[in-house]
Amino acid sequence: MRELGEKDCELLGGIFAYLIQAFLGVCAVLSLVYKRHVERPQRTWFIWGCDVGKQLFGGFFVHFANIFVSSLLEDDEGDQCAWYFINFFVDCTFGVCVVYLIHGAICNLAKRQWGSQTALAEIGKYGEPPRSKQMKVWAVQLVVYLFSLVMNKVIVASLLYSTSSIMEPFGNWLFGPLQPNPQAELVVVMVLCPWLLTTLQFWLFDMFLKSPDKDDQDGEGLLGSKEVLGPDGRQSSDDDGVRTTYEAPSDGTFDSEGGEGGGEGEGEGEGDEASLRRADSP
Image 1 (cartoon, rainbow, N blue to C red):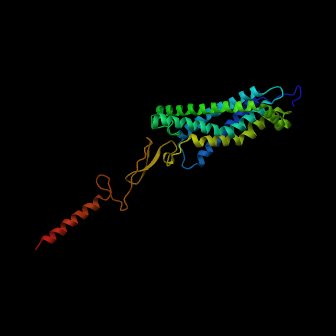
Image 2: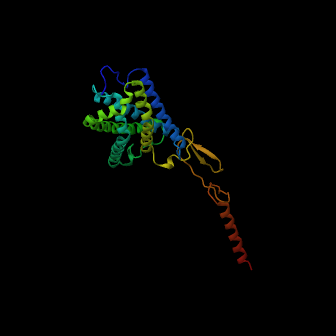
Image 3: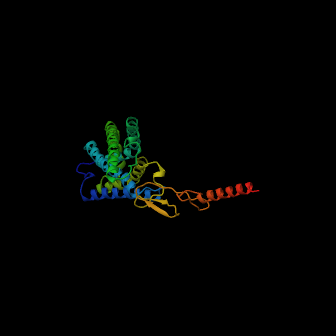
């Protein structure tokens, strides 16, 4: 139990708290940069930016929603930082499953209602240029993702409120040794504990917020162009995102229209005519 006059750990209690939260956000984004670096096939920076942009908006909402819920659940004997950790832990475990189910249900409902024309038909795909059209698709997908997070937070907050008589003593016991030093408790709650949990949560969300179609990501260049093979065997870049495929014949010949084996077919025809003339001659 907290002693009278003992200073509380506050999530929004000065410049130190804000710096800690900014550091946590930077670490989460850098983890996604690393994930793009090692993933195969690799997304273009534009597609990756759209996918991560949804997570950034969602991450800001979840973070401040957790702070708000923690301040509501805290009482004279509670600990705001402990409540934040409990909130965060439930979000990164049970909450990920809830968001996945709600998000998937909305997308399936939209596909049944509007078919392949809906922006939710293929999550992580934003259509063809122009960029304004692609950003509209992105905005629709973002709204659905944020709605899933809101519904999850309502469910999690209700669950924590109904079990507050159990969760509050548990939080005080868990962080009791750190409560006399609020800044140390803040570092543990906002950095050490969430570091792995935030990375795990972002990676899991990234798995169903990006396109599962590998063909859309294979061979993409740094700025979103794709490398293609021209008739001369050289690589070229198609900036419109359309892959053009040329298959070179085994003997390296092309007909006058770029087709394969034109010269060979003409040679065979001329040989057949010569044979017929020899056969008809006396």
